[in-house]
Structure formats: structure tokens, C-alpha cells
Image (cartoon, rainbow, N blue to C red; front, top):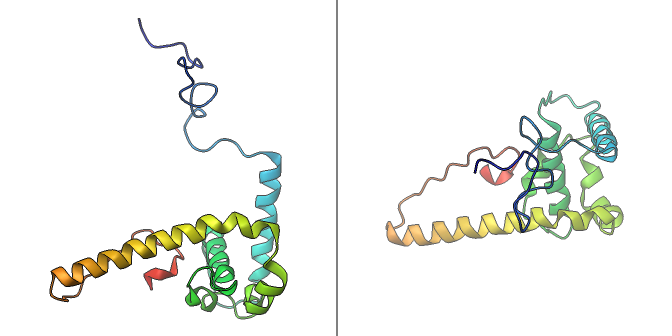
Length: 158
């Protein structure tokens, strides 16, 4: 009896190598490459907002989503999100505008890594539209209210 020794794994795999998450929980430590990329993104986003007088104070992760959705909207409408571009700084949003998106970014290696955003958007939009269609017929076209919690810069909440 008793619990297995710390760091051991049950027969047949089960669980991550080493017997569990790092002490205290949370994601695994970043590699050197990930740290360098994180710094590069932080510097890049500061440059994108130089001269912007909107005083946006938000996490860079939320802003990355906003810029990504604007880019995907301008790449042959991979996502339908015309509002994302409107929320970007007027002096630098051209970087993900239609011309740049289809001339510079379209064949960039990282674009294929964004497919999960397209799939997530399609899934959520389909589920939402199906729900609205099914409830409007059941409720004699009464208005249905949807509340999005934690939507960040997912502009469908607008």
C-alpha cells in the first residue's frame, strides 16, 4: 500500500514525465528561445504603439489577439472581424492591412500556425448562430441575450 513514490509513473504511461506539474502548479518553465521570442514581442508591440494617443493599457497577449484577428480578417477574410482593425492604432494598423496582409504576410511561415484561431472562431460562431436560430423559433422571436465572459479583444462581443 500507500501512494506511489514521488516522481514515479504508473505502468502504461499516465501523466507527464517526472510525475506531475512543477511545484506550485502552472505552465512549465520557458525555454531560452521562448524567452527571447517573448522579449521580441514585447518590444514589437511597444513599437506598434509609438505615437498612439489612445493610452491603451492592456496585456500584450490581448493585443496580440487583436492584431492577429485584424490580420486574419485581411487575409482573404479567414475570420470575419472588421472591427479588430478599427481598434488598432491609426498610425501602425497598415502593417496588417489588406495590402500588407496579402503581399507580405500571406505566405509567411507563421500564418499556418494561426489555423487554430480560425477553427476556434468558426466553432464559436457556428454554435452561437445555431443557438440563436433554435431559440428564436422556440420563443416566438423574443430577444435572447448572450453574455460573453472574459471576451478580451474577441470583438464578436461588440
